[in-house]
Length: 215
Image (cartoon, rainbow, N blue to C red):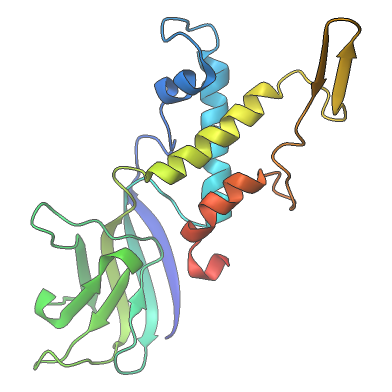
């Protein structure tokens, strides 16, 4: 489609963290009653969640968005893709989307929606594939995951664990030996191979969630 788009958050989530403090403490083996490191762990959670969102170029937590588009012209059967997805659905399975063309609300009967991909297909009066053809298009929708996928949470927790265990350790030291007591060899943060510092295993878990224009 030939258009430009402005996307804004209409109703932000209360938190963009991908895991809870209790989940992180359980992984790290910290007693839930021990609150001495809560602030530090919370910082790790927020920083890691933000880094994952940046890597995947998407927001995982559900929020309400508005995509405002100018010159929304496309070919027949070509979908409009929302900036964030999956699109949430209500208890009846109806996608939470409202579309306005040139200031006029579009009847949902003229829409086919694939929520998982954020794809909105325009139909004509006979429910046949049509083309988006309007000077102004406004799409209000709720997008994100609820709950957060288990593998995304697992990737987040894995990275938090690596970050937490590295606190206070010289990153240039790969091993240390205490004579007659212990020898330790440290991981190089999960075999990173790019500038993000993201552990390789974490990156592999997250790759399927990178939206297409982030690849």
